[in-house]
Image 1 (cartoon, rainbow, N blue to C red):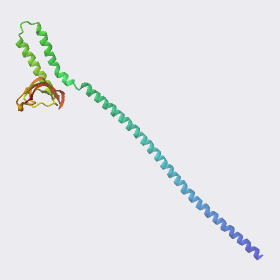
Image 2 (cartoon, rainbow, N blue to C red; image 1 turned 180 degrees about the horizontal axis):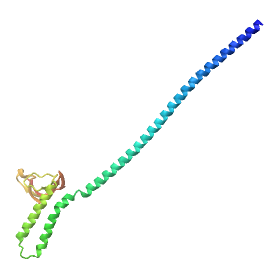
Image 3 (cartoon, one colour; image 1 turned 135 degrees about the horizontal axis):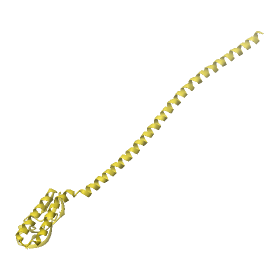
Length: 197
């Protein structure tokens, strides 16, 4: 019986060892499971954060796109208004001159007016008009006895000259030219000397 008891005892010890191993395994499994649950929670939190960030990014993109579209529309409207009303100040300044010319034409019925008075009225109106265009940086090209410049002048008449010093010199202005802010509006039509042997 001793041997039998020993075998049973060994079996019991083995069973105990197996139970201890199983219990140890169960404990380890529980710990691992807990860690996994914590990591899953953390991963889910990160997924939510990513989702919210992506949602915010999309909202920002949409708002930015809408803002850019609004800016584009506003700029188009501003450009349209600038284009439409850019001559408004000029027009306002030129209206009194138009009124002066109309008044001069109304006086044509008055037979007591002489040509000198009409001439003086037209001359005054012209001076006013030249002052208005000067306000808007429009300058007149009308100088004579200067060198011909094809950028600002158009030679309409060429007169021969034996004097080498007079070559390409403007003799007279046939029609004034105009420049606005350094941009040519119309070249001056001129008569020039051309040297000829």
